Length: 322
Image (cartoon, rainbow, N blue to C red; front, side, top):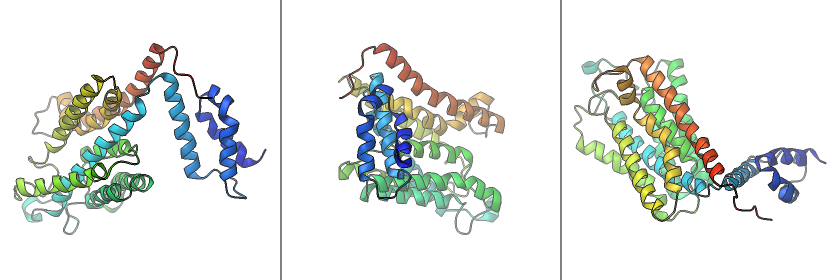
């Protein structure tokens, strides 16, 4: 047995035991036949493909057939929301108030380092419209990465950055958006780009430059994230209810997947309620940290819990293909 074959067999542990016994040799043989001569490690694309296939079979074994369609639905809504928010924040970055009037540091003509992340999200929306599939996911992954590194870069350079209650929901939405489906029609592929542009135009024309400027903490900007949370929650609940009437449960799975990003979007009001602070005040750091911990721990835990419940309620799942 070659080292490459051994490594493919290790990856194959992603599949259920019964499936490995019946199809494992065939799957590994296919990958070995397609591998380049002399290769010692599975390619990243092959590794991701094996892991996706294993996850798909494990989900199928639980009887949760709507989970993967639910992931794709959640990813589409998450990408729409993330790009729309990036469009709003782009307008904010491009319209700073005079420093003398607010006494806040700036990054040249921009508010902060956030301009880098919001530009990356705009490019991700463009990639999704023009090159769906692997390239679009890579663009979203790059936008997520650039959003995440703003915090250490700001700490190292002393340059301003958007607050964590703006960055955290963008990261949550971006991670969900990585599950976007391939092969969408052109109208749906262009939706994130339209959302980004539409949100930016709306922010530019409906909000006064005198108040929609200088800071992510101004009173006209603070409601943006909770409003987005309510909108996402309303859309996924309505979609889920409509699909459930036809026996399609993907809306319920999408709701479970989006609960964490929705909680992060509503982080500030949730922390304010925890801290007993009026809406116009910024909650304490402890309240924000505690609320973030609860949202990021409880939200993701609900999905495996739902899968376990679904598996117990489906004692005889569909037989695996032979």
